[in-house]
Image 1 (cartoon, rainbow, N blue to C red):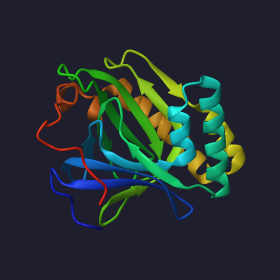
Image 2 (image 1 turned 120 degrees about the vertical axis):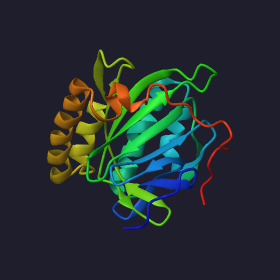
Image 3 (image 1 turned 90 degrees about the horizontal axis):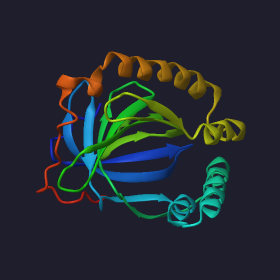
Length: 217
């Protein structure tokens, strides 16, 4: 296994599907231990993403954005896409990536001076594989959005997940592992464990304003 990454260093999260990079995001390391790799980014952090997915984010028409998103999923299934430049937008993100799990727990904060926690966001993904530059994983299309106080939650993109299953983007192995991961995450929320624990300090975390936006190597 590559050595642990130093706090403050830049790492790259890559989503890789069938050997091809679907997206890449530069992140700043907050801490790295055997329990989890914790990284963060602010608006302006450099990345790459599939061009059709970028188009869906920039399309001001909801119907057009949905059509672009559908086409990007077809591109993914066919293995035919190109990457475009992307910058992280809107939030400060803190990402908790434990080894061997089919999920990461992300906290999204306001980039304004109050830095308030806006929401928790659980990203379901393949277990991370460390690389010399960071880690590789693959987003499995469905997510869980959780209120800052953990009082409520809702699943996001279930329709897209079902379509991804039909297209073969999410195979049976990933599906079964993800179903187990759903239960793990809901138990963590109910028990207020991991990053959700009050004594974990995540709600009070502040990004270091002296760190510049990370760039892709």
